Image 1 (cartoon, rainbow, N blue to C red):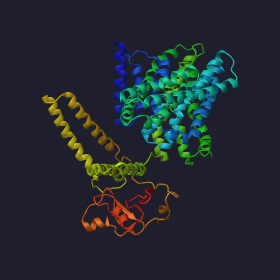
Image 2: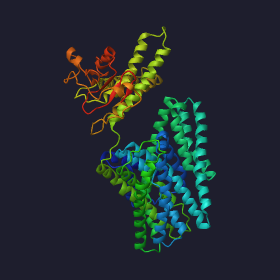
Image 3: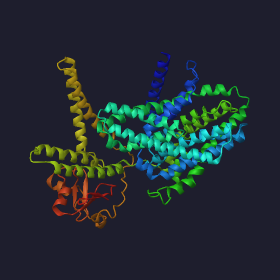
Image 4: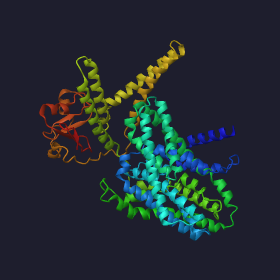
Length: 622
């Protein structure tokens, strides 16, 4: 009962603090650390010492796996040199510099000082990405921080293992190099093998529950064998997650993917937030241990402050010169879009987390002043979380760093969905036969067009008018509420078997969840200016040859709608003749009708602040 109540209290505290953090606009990890620190001094809270095995074996693999399956392998590849520079180069430099500072401030062996440097060198995978997403940083920055934090633990743990070995004997540069090479190569190899094996198994699994259960095993299937052969379990888990996440649309059906995603999001929420609460709960036991030290308070305080300042300063010193060189390297396939503002954000997003604190407990008890090193690890962890975590949103605002523009995303989404709908349309044309009901074919075509129109509607200002998709959402939500109320009445009356009613309720839940998803993706950007996309030069001759603008034949709205007395949603301008027509979400679709009547291929948006163009012939955005 004692253990059960302790677990229940942890979950309840994590849930309540997360809800409160969302309401007050504070990142949940920071609030949970503060709550944990305060709770550790309550008389009825027993001292809690974080076990390295609990973190490194129990918490770290599922946390890394949950993050990696949601990370784009394509995006990671695009900035792999930058990630390598941070996850390997910066970690090694931080280990060496912090180690030297520690050796100068504390009476401990050099190997022990380097071990402490390795402990505090890796930024946390959870802290960096959760705060970065919370404040809305650009996706490129988030990808770099994600990739760095997923892989830097491997470098730090190998460096820590090497330093601990050096405490008991000599090590050579050749031996250290071989350890790093084997940790990386062995981790990648084992991760790929586990991913391919699981992919073969999961292709044959049709039950979503069984498939999700197998996914729960994946991080441990990758981590444990890698650690057993002294390779990097961290790299093995990340590799397995990246590969399986990339292959998920091929090896899983839609139901399995949705089930797995919901379950892993729940696990990630609980583990991530529990980790930060546990960090705060360490304070009391750490201070009790430090109280038995022979060192003066000034020496201890000087070491803790010195370690924190060194960790914070070494990152920008590395990121500004080295990060830019890596980002503009000729082998990078992504065009250079680096700036000093981006460097400033990346250099300040160096929050440490639970791996740092857990690794500190790995230090041998025979190391002189080991309790002071553990305190230093906590100060670095809590200090970076509170100082950098709280000031990162302010820094992003001051530098004018903004996250992805919602309407720019809608424009790209519309382009992708246009291609997907067209592919589905071609397939329907190929497989339809005379035996198929024409009404069914018409409904299928209409559904594809409706999905596409919902995205296009997000691109324009409707001047207070409710677009068709929003009308559908509002009306269908009311209908579903009435349908559910009637089903509940039938259930309570005991007129129909419960299994039948469960099936009906599940169907209603699925439809309502899709409506809720569309509603949650509503426009949230305060600034609604749509960025002009890169011209599709060479992809479409019509776009290349079309003029930038044309004189409109109407400045009051859709020319034909005004003549017919009908309503429009968004406006489009023909760049060949200047005809102003309404979009495909409008009732009459005059822009498309104009194209079919005149064969004028290119139109552009005629909405304020929008400059994107569309080729009807090649279906290319420009």
